Length: 516
Image (cartoon, rainbow, N blue to C red; front, side, top):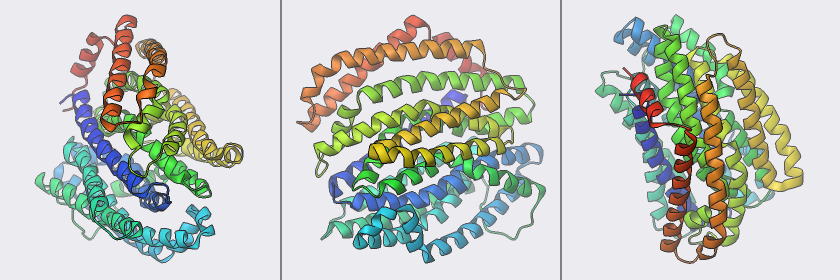
């Protein structure tokens, strides 16, 4: 299967997961409205999500997949399975201890990540209890992410990328459950997260067993590969989780303003759609493929692949950024303005989204560049750059929040992302085995111009369609679909006229980047 077909598979399941995640968040907004319970849930869930990014999908997998691929290629399946089982056991023990510690000290932890809640004792009490319910989710989802890393290392992407669907299905079911109060609904929603973690873990564990990679706890010794993994993980903790750390900081400051946490979360949900389709889809498939090519010393092919992936990322990211910026309000009104979700909430979320989308291009590029470093076995450089980004975000968050409220929080995250991308790109260009080719640079400029022409077209049409939004759900979805289709047609027309990405280029890339 080619790289782009593999990416399409991953992106397809990721998109399906994001769509069900959207329905989950729509129901949260519709059920809880502006009661503040959504603030509590989002902050409580942010904590295990942070550690999932750090220990599982981030630092662990970015270091694990290249080493697992290397052992599998050089030493064979038996040693690769032994290596995976050892990491599985070590990770399980670490996370068990971490879970116990956080369960005991949850009041102190919530005091740090949601200081604004302390002004309302009942709100803080609910945050602590919800935090205790959802935090064990990290134990199951992290072990499941390791199993997913094994599957991705074997170029088996379907089971791993389909598993997040289970979380959204469990949460949606919980929100549909009939209860006597909204507080009871919030507790059931929290429990559904934990049960979903168990289900996700069983799902990918079974997929590994079908491939005869049995992931079980066992006695272990620190082999050279395991020691190398632990050394690479330490710097990877910051670099892989920078986005989540920035969100945690943002939410902590936002907890002082009612509904600010929810506004940031709803806007981020929409912003995550194109990021999932491009950055996450590309990174998931690119890491094992680049690792294999570099292990086989196919350095020219690896560099060619990196440039083509960046080119394809520009093709997808530029129009998504511009369209989301222009269409923010009709998108939020169509997707979220139901039940207790008011028009005022739509306007506020749309304003935050207009800021957040400006971080979409750097976040996609960061994902690709970080993957290139990880494939080279270099987790130190992304860590140093991520540390700078986090420091920038912290300083800018407190500064801009003072003058611009939660809009400043969103702006701080955007600026930090651009800082991260700039220094990460500069560091990669300094390596001897990587360079941007002319084809990429020329294509990026043409694709950006095509996206800007699309943006102008959407702006001209906007005054004609906006008065019809916000009245009927069916009409809203129909108008939004037509609006998006118009933008897509304009963009593709100018991509063709400007030759930003030709059919021949796309076919050549697919034919020359086969995943074995």
